[in-house]
Image (cartoon, rainbow, N blue to C red):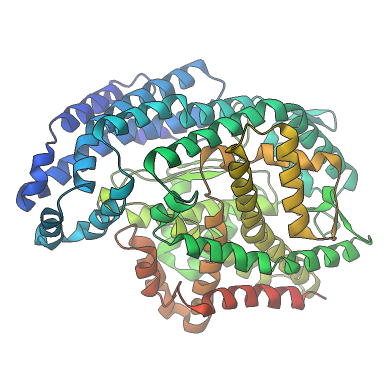
Length: 571
């Protein structure tokens, strides 16, 4: 039930790890920006650039994965720190080439774009060119990389280590954070209330320390904005995701305009619970009398069956994760919370981390992360500079996989159970779409306030409380402890404005799923082509091949219409 990292290295002391770092540094040292002036030389230059990145990133991948299950282990901490330092050294050696590419004279850049030998890098080249206005001198770029070691990277690691030590007592047992969070879905109201009290009391008590972390990473980001000359806090995110700032704002506004769906759902849930309002302790309360137990083996077979019905190829890929131990399954002391899929490299493979709790929610998480895994696995057909998943598409395969699992479950349940599963689908939409937009509003307001001065825990509490009230309206009864929930959301520390992508990804999935319902098996090759494309083209270009137009007015209308229909179908 623990992953096998030996496909990367045999252990922290594996000599190949240091050899790869040394080779990466040597390759980077030999990359001359002058090669960009000759398209034929540029072909070899970009191949060596990719080799340097691959040789450097593989040790970083291993160190990060090794640390993820051993956050309190001195060897794991030292390894990650050492590899991060060496990787930063590598990035700094690559700075002259990267700066030269972004600032290349127009005529020389056009020759690169038109060269047949670089045709598969056209999108990559255009992406790099878009950063030209915000690229500093070589020395300044090196200094910003070094600043990152004691800035966002250091604070991110501290947050993971610090929160990884949190322990909670519920029912006389000592639990990890992920275990106590899982109890918020327990059928017993007394258990839910105890879990809620333990979780948020801890976050409230730790808010002074965690607010210092938030203040530090926000200030780091604000400094980057100022130094690079960005005019809007969402501009780096829009540039990275190849969308316009106005596209992100349109998503936020459209979602906020439909907040009433969330209030309507929780009024419905309160009625089912026999209450006037849904207590915050019951936001995740199951509507079943008993919490369905789904052991990992059963969850595995459910997910594989759902994948096989869609595509035998998808099921075969997912099965590899189990057979070759690319998954770390259960929570344990020192293991970081949450779940993720690390994409790896085209020459390696993805890894999935879970904190499985043997319930339906955990089965959905398994489907979600394996969706990511299939996405990265298929994208390996791309070369390294085109590998990965752009943020607007990053959550596509994961959420699509959850819906495939729900379809399977729906078909095998009696009428009453289907109603409950439909309600859970609505709750998933609340958490994946609406709450993520609420998170983005919280992050944007907090960042704006940070321009003036460091925020106190109380200031964070207030912003969080106000944004929650806007989302849920008058449908939820909150406790004083709920205002500290922001402190337990790692995305606010590890990334900037990533949460909006869950919302965009959810709407993309609804559009793709609509196509699937219309076209049946004829849609499957189009969907797999989206996943195989990696970052070889813009998200809009990739989705257009599957018949989805992000610029269409129908895009938002269709997605929210589906959610409205689900809500109306609840008795």
